[in-house]
Image (cartoon, rainbow, N blue to C red; front, side, top):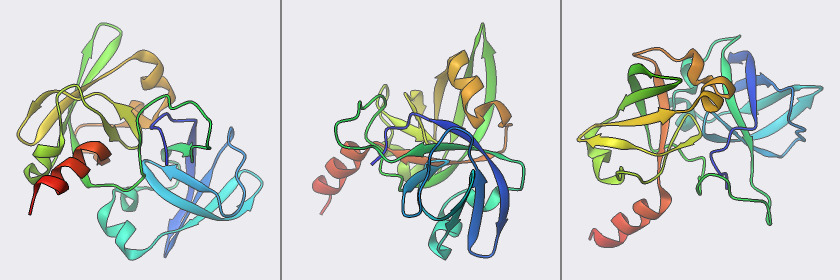
Length: 189
């Protein structure tokens, strides 16, 4: 379980085969720890100093945007929530629902408004002023339309996440609110 509050900006050291190696400056990681990497729950399989290696299944490569990563890219990192810790964002599983695209980044004073598009079959899961994670960042969608939403990014979030490197057309991992997903599955036959 995660919160969508990014704790470190890691840097991709290596990507290939079944694995991904990420360097972290702020996190203390041990083998076996669960870490959300751009919102994807991964298990640390080896730790050498500040370098952490993760193995990824074919399912993970195919259903997330992690396959787009290249050495040097920044990734959002969050360790798993420990019992008793503050829930600063919202409940996040680290199970990506779909991959969306950055459609636009619009400056608005000292903040940015980012428009995200996604496959329309997921539209019922996006609730105006609800919760969504974009590359693991807990955000509040607004301007929700069939297949798109906007998020407002304050300067702190812009500077401390990988959003500052995103450009229109970039793919991003999306996880929709868990409560909404359960309600939807309960209502559907």
